[in-house]
Length: 133
View: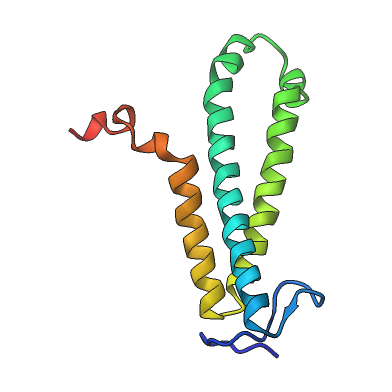
């Protein structure tokens, strides 16, 4: 049974029975992997937003098509596939955080910050803040 409170240490099982760490090297490797996985999650979120913005014009030009044709269009199927990956990855990250090991929780936070910094920098542009000036 896992601890239901925040704790430290290097002995942890993460997500799967085979992802068991018992030493500092394993924890460091897992922390680096979790940071990269979380950054990838942020990149996927940003990429889906980018695709949505890019396909808005396409969707407007395709309004005369039937609903069935739009439902089975390649771009919608691709967005659906990416959505499933994003949701599953998000749940994996939630379960990883729920180990309550503070090293692992910090890794999720650092990965989120790194991913947002790398992939969502366009959100900080002046185009998105004109309403507030």
